[in-house]
Length: 130
Image 1 (cartoon, rainbow, N blue to C red):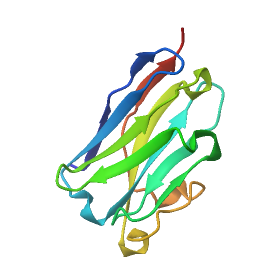
Image 2 (image 1 turned 135 degrees about the vertical axis):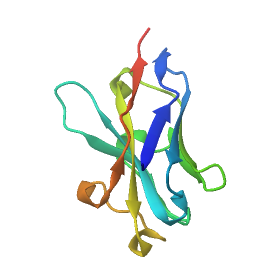
Image 3 (image 1 turned 90 degrees about the horizontal axis):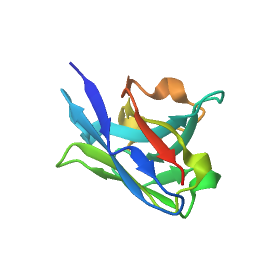
């Protein structure tokens, strides 16, 4: 069974940091681009960060640039999202997703191409509040 399992969410004060992890089981991330999406109540799901399968290219939504960093460890079969300088508006359920194929070796799918992502995790809650 192909699975992605997120962890690392929780409650943090504004200005704080969290590191989310997304571990793959049943398959290798070597040939997958990875992305983090988030969704808060009453809002559409949005792409936050993505990384190509070879790890050579990343993309971020404007609101997190300079604060969030995505990384991929093929040896650990895990993708990470380091989140610094967190704001209340970052509160959401965070999902990781994987897109298979050589098309994504050097550039991940755009955030609007959600259909390219084949495997999704169930999400982890991040709450930023004082």
